[in-house]
Length: 534
Ligand code: ACM
Image 1 (tube, protein in one colour):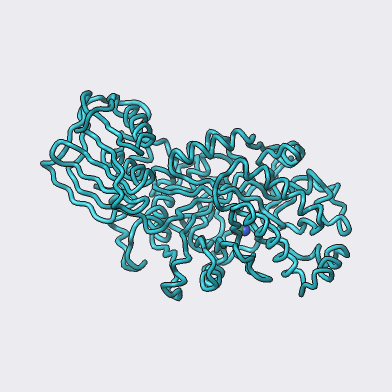
Image 2 (image 1 turned 135 degrees about the vertical axis):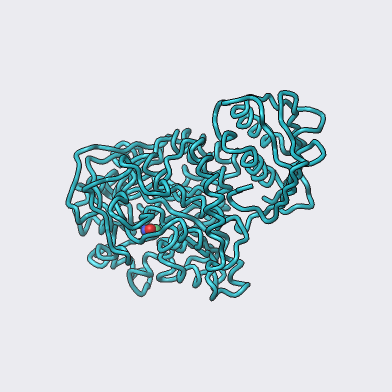
């Protein structure tokens, strides 16, 4: 039935089909009421049917303690559609499957027709392969307004993705209101101009841009996500990628090396030499940031970045060198490790866990830390073997800012060519991991860095259709890469494109970008090798 992601098992029997009409009830058993309300609202909007609560028959949602968390069973036969889930999340993912079974028009927000709705007769068993099925949204390089983030959560939920990693801070913008440090957003929340395309194009615009989320906006995002069984993991990038914070509070930078008071929010892309200093005052400052952050985000994990922190300023800084001597550290790598460990202990003491990019392995991994393995698999392999949890998101495979086809029409072609098929064949578990280490790979994530995505339309184009393939990799039990049935996936995609159309997603069409999706004359990075500092 063209489900994406593919379920574990599915059997279809035509005679069991269940027509839905104005009298069909939707009954949500104990513990499934919120999912029932969600399903009634989306299917009610799309079909025009009331789907009122009843005493059974029609659509029935129930919890089933015999099923594992997040797993579900659907049985459409004998005049009923019974959805059982191991927990509310399982029921919710099953509800997403029911919606797909109703056909693409079930993804519209108002009915084109009120008749002719039917669920196909079927028995479906399903459960996710990975518990962390994530997407990173970089809302720093280009701010994504709240309404677009909420819409993106709906798109994630439709694909059974369950972790939104929100990259809230970077050199190019600070996006989370911190009440005790208002300049983080008033000064750090916008910039004067940007590079247009890749560095080699040497083009800039003069368009100020920016924005930030209030704490209440973020609470709304977190609650909206939770209603869709999605966890929001916030990222505050430390100690590199921090120029927006340094612009707002120049004392956070290496003031004995650079005149940080002259720094604005960065108007370039790439790896930035202006990193945080390592003073006690800077540690306290970010503890203050995190105190407010923990009040907004209930997630177990807090991402503290740790990537791409050039050590030049620390090498040149008498204060940083004095810190290295005082702590008896071997050098700047250990200094970064000490910095991250400080926040690892701080978060652990508050019942949370630190996750960081794989650079946090350099100089020694903090005891409780988990790792987002982005520079390939190696960091994740090392961390998993050392008993740390890992999210696999290697840039060579699942950086969705990278172009999805060769050819002159692909807009702002960055980095590797990674087609829909490449993403479909991505394998999160590298073969060198034994079963014990593999258990530490808690999941996988696709990352959407937005240097070259100005708005939600650009995000749609880069994310889709590849995020549908990624969702299948993260959710479904697939054979080894080379044995995967891409032709079958493409056939299912034919229907899935119609779902995305109904949702209003401006994906990359299979035949290539529409004229208005191209960016003629804007330089990209045409190499197919590693990309030095985008
Ligand atoms: C990263 O792409 N710098 C995590």
